Image (cartoon, rainbow, N blue to C red):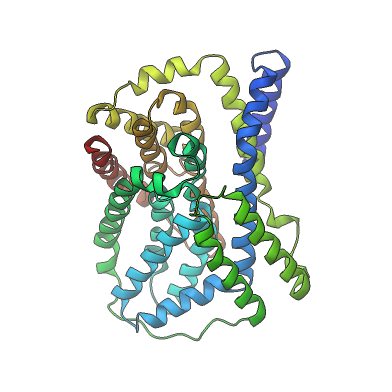
Length: 383
C-alpha cells in the first residue's frame, strides 16, 4: 500500500468516526486548528528544498565539501556527518532522507568510494539528529506548544544535551562500522554542472537566509512560506518548467491529515487509558526510560508519528514529553517502516541503483537505538 492509500483509509476511518459521533465535531476542529500550521510548514519547506535541489545547491555544496577535504576520506566523512546533521536540524529529517541521500551517493560514486556508508549516514542522522530544533521533525512541532511554544532556545535548553548525545552515539557507531572499510584517500572529480548560475545563487541566498529565521521564535510556517514564494517567483522567471504540482508532498499531506483525524477518534474512545498503563508516570530516571522505551517500541512497531500522537496525552510534563520525543525521534531506526524518512531514503537508494540489505539496517539500528535511549534520557533526569 502506498502512503496516499494508507492516508485515504485513515481519512475514511476518521470521517466514519465523525459521522457516527465517536469523534465530536468540535474536537475535530480543534485537531484541524492545531495541524494546519504544521502541514503548511511541511509543504513550504519541501518546496524550498526541492527547488534548491533543482538549482543544484546540494550538489554544489557536496562537491565543495569533497574539495575541502582534499582527497582525505576521514575529513570527507566528518564533513558529510556535519552536513547531514545541519540539514536535518534546520530543514527536517525528510529533506535529509529525500534530497541529501542521492547527493552524497553521487558524490561518493564519482570519487570511487562505496556509497553505502554515506547513505547510512543520511538515514541514521535524519532520525537521530531530529531532536535538535522544533522544525527538525513533525513530532517536535506537535510538542512545541507544551515546550515553550516556538521558542528554539527553550527547546534546546530542554533537549539540547539529549540531542548532542544522540548525534554523538550515531557518529561513533557509524564511524566504527564504516570508516575503516573506506580507502584513506579518493581521487578528485569534476565539478557538477550548473544549468543556471542565477538560480543557484538565489537558491543559496534564500536557503541561508531561511535557516536563522527558523530559530528566532517565529511560527515556522511564516519564514518557510516566504522563502517558498520567493523561489517560486524566481523559478517562474528563469525555469518555469521546474514548477509543477508535484512539488507539493501530496502523499505526506494525505497521510498526516488522515492520521491526525484517526488518532483523534482513538483518543475520543479512550486510547489514553491503555497508553497510560504502558507508559507509566513520574519524572524519575526509571520512569523516563520506561516512557522513552515504550515510545521507541511503538514507533518501530507501527510508525513514529502515530506512536507520538497516541502517547502524547500521557506525557504530562515537559520532561516526560522530551523523553517521549527521544523515543519516537531517535528510536525508530530498527524497522524499515518506523520512520517515513527511512522509507523515503530507501526509495531514493533504489532509484540511484544502490542496493541495501534491510538486515544490515536492522542490525545497526538495534545497536544505536538502545544506546541513545539509555544515554540521552540521563540529562533529563539530572535536570
